[in-house]
Image 1 (cartoon, helix red, strand yellow):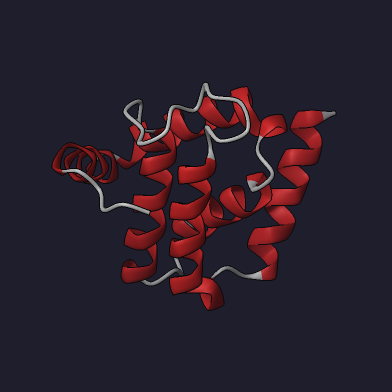
Image 2 (image 1 turned 60 degrees about the horizontal axis):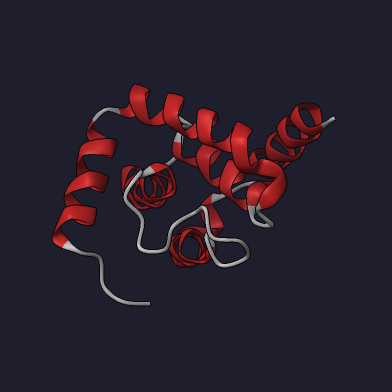
Length: 121
């Protein structure tokens, strides 16, 4: 994966500064695409971890950066492209989760499964 552009980095920084806006945009985009992305459960579990008050700040920043990339309107690969449109989002999320895997708890994952089940049925 190529390095982030200056504009992408600034967009992620801005998104993490305004956490309420990021949360709203996250849920809006997730509702639109949840059935199309195979990494939805990991993404939602990462969101719950990032917004958990007991999560360390470093972990929150890493996960919020990945979530901000997911909701960014400017994307390295357009999300409108079939099959490959979310590949970059998945790669960024996978890299973030690899860095903080021990912080995403079973509780975060269970909440993610429940939310996805309730929203997709």
